[in-house]
Every structure is written in structure tokens, then in C-alpha cells.
Image 1 (cartoon, rainbow, N blue to C red):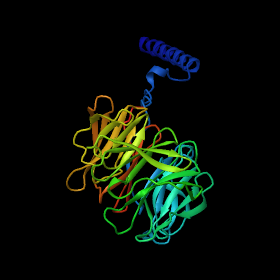
Image 2: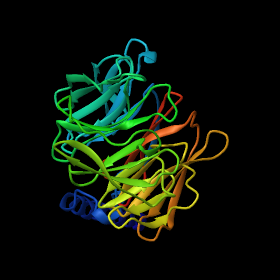
Image 3: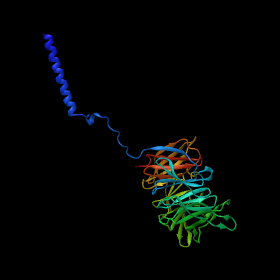
Image 4: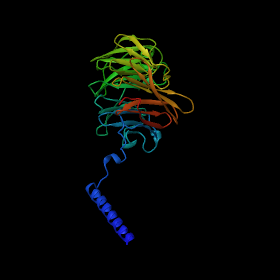
Length: 361
């Protein structure tokens, strides 16, 4: 009898406990947030990646207006050659390919990101391309010399605020020294006066912030030239910093060179040099980013490894580096895209698209 009473009390107690538990569960049907797994915190900036694409190209530019990288695709690429390809850098996918002419090579983009100029090696000409509509436009040649033959474009730049005007560093083909003088073209029509040629001429050019002033440099020595542009054409104003040469890029009042020099062209002073960039062979394998206060250079290491170096443009101190493996050929056409992106091509049909924390977010 006692055992039966004990069993009944135990059953009532268990039933009561079960009812209390059910009430609590109904009142709180979800687990408290503190007991759930905490979500991953969002990253401080965009994702980082290194993407390598097998693509035959001759040059690259980036338009912030369209958010696309544009590549010149030569005839050696096969069925997709002789074209301008628009590439989405966030995915690496080609979004559009447009036939442009015989063997497109060098590219230059207007400051509004719309007018893209491309040199056509097969035609010794330059053609305009509308990056917004992917439409080819005006094509023109650079003229000819009575003795050396037709001029070819070696480097060119679009005038600030005037997408119809470009300056061209012309070459005599097969001649040494090859410089044939810098000329300015308005919608394909050359202004009469051209800059000096041969050893006094420029191989590389970059506009200042004004369409009336252009900077030039030679492959070897000669310094940074200042060229004045007016309605009659081009005239050499001065030549400064004799030890600075090679490819040049202008940004925020400064001229940066492929050999690591930073020059104030208005005062003619060398502000400093980035150490050990070894980029003379990579004429376009550098890019300044004065908004971020940095400059980026690609330098060659052994066995297919290239190092991307980030420098402070005020102190010239190396801030960081990134080793890129599997690089075949010579890197050129280094450019900035997006909030923390870089891209470059190689002479062995590779395209590298990078996002990196070396660029401050």
C-alpha cells in the first residue's frame, strides 16, 4: 500500500514538472539570441583575391564611368582578335567584344571615361571608341615623312576636358633614334607645329591637369620635358631632372616614372625615388594613386614570381608587398580599379585581376 501511494505521488510530481516545462516552452518558442552562433563580422573592406585569366592582350585601361577594364585584343588571339574587349573586373568575365581594326595595341582613355583611343599597328593609325556604347568611331593616320615614311604612334594621351583632342609621341619605324616629334590632333586633324624629334624628342608623354601643358620623357636620359600646347601645336618649354627617364604618369601635380622617380615638373626638382623597383623593363608596370597616398610597382623575381610593392608617395617608404606566382612573360599596363583593385597583363597572354589590402579601403 505504501509503495502504491509513493508511486502515485511520483507520477503526480512528474506530470506537474512536465506541465511547467510545456508552459515555459510555449511562452518562449525561440531560443535566446545569445545562445545562437554569432554571425561572422563583416570585413573592413572589399574581399581580397588574385584572379589569373588566360587572355591575349596588348594593353589595358579602366573606366570608372562604366566600371569595366578595356583590353586591346590583337589578331594573334584568333577569332576574337582585332577587337576591344570589355571585362568586368569583379567577375573576370568579358561582357562585350567589338571589332576595332587591324592589330589594336596601345590604349588611352579620356578623363570622362567615355572616349577610348586605340593604336592600330596594321594600319599605322589611331581609332576612337565609345566605351559607353561599345561603338568604333573616327580613324586617322599620323602622316608621313618624305624620307623615313609614315609615322607610327608610340605613346599618346587624351587632353583633359577635351575628349576630341589627343597628343601623340610619334616614331619613325625602323630608325634609330626613332623619335619623330610630339603632335596634337583635333578629331584627327593635326595642328601644324610638332615637338622636337630624334634625341631631343619624347618617347613617353602625359598631360598635366591642363590641356595646354604636356610632359614628355625619353627611354634613356634626357630628363622630364615640359611641352606647351596651343592652337599652333607643340613647343618645348624646358627639360629638367636629367636622371629621370622611361615611362611616365601624371597625378596631382607630380610626374612618376617607371624607374621609381617622383618629380615636381613645375619646380624641376626630384622629390625622391622608390627603392629597388627595377621596373625599367616594365614600362607600364606601375601606377600612382595619389588619393590613397600610394604608388604601386611590379618588380621581377625568379621562377615566375613577381612582387607587387606599395610605397608611401610622401615618405617613399615601402609599406607592404605581395608576391604573385605563376606569372609568365613581362608584366605591363598596371592599373587601378574600384576601391582596392589592381590589374595587369603579361606579354605571354595572361591577365591578372587583384583586390588587395595594400590599397587602403
